[in-house]
Length: 395
Image (cartoon, rainbow, N blue to C red; front, side, top):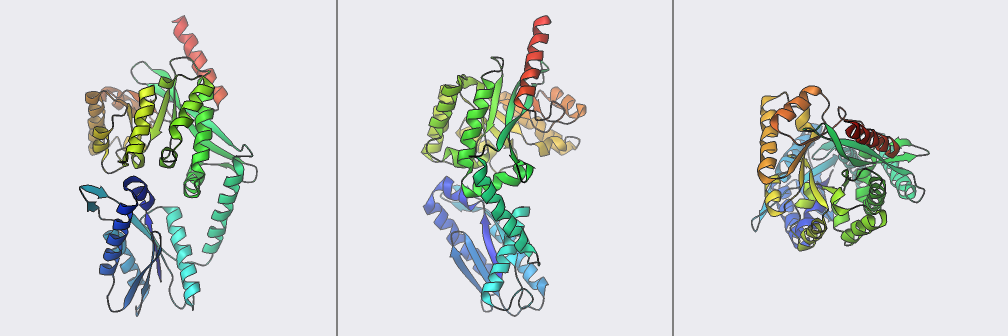
């Protein structure tokens, strides 16, 4: 029994609309039917973007693994419709009869647990059921319950990581990073709770809180300092995002041009008028738009052409491999592109002087990372900015 769940399907549905999502599901169904043996295997859609396959008469687990690999490859190929290109992946959980269950319900439940385990470790993966996976499922449900209770209990806080102007050597702002300090769990890193918040829809409330808090903090910084805040696709699509931003600015007194909204390509993929209108409205007020994790998606250059952004942030994976010739060439090209388009380029994950030196020589505008400064509390960040202002005055 193979339990399947599409990766990134919600982004396609949100981006291109439900008719495109329905068309994509039909395409996936056809590809799955082509991947199995027509006489021995059965493909079913359970609802939403969930599918299941019964693979009969196999000799060993290796046959199930072979089918899983084939499905990951086939489903992951691009889908083209009306000049648009869509991308989804697939994760699979596998349960084998009779070792993992002797009836349909048990096999499906265990295949689902294996699927969940795979999705918690990454996307585009397959996992076989193992005893003890039910404990992981219970832990996830407990995490979601704690997460929902955490916001009214004020368990969230923001840290701030400084951003350096490479040319002047001065700090020019910071990025707000969300942290969850749970009484029972201790400090929970974003890697462990942001995905759960997105899946439960709580990310909209969390994002609004972070925006208001970050603007209030930045309002007390020197007037030339900018605040960068991460924004999820769900927030922008929630309908009231522009109002939330305007309200946060008005309540804090922070000028719009000192706020930078960091969005990912999932947002930029959206061709809907509502999303582009929202971003254009905010940009018209003076709010800056930054494209985060640049280079890790599919069509970054297309997004830049369709919607002008103020900043692109080179993903840390490129900076980590700067000593490789091909990676260094890509980074230099992105920096050159930014210069041509009049877009600020920030390198993320800068950890060594050698990396900073290479970026300086390539003409990169800004840098962020542990070499520049680790994420710090608001009070520590304010002290850093005040001491910098005093040094500038004395100089």
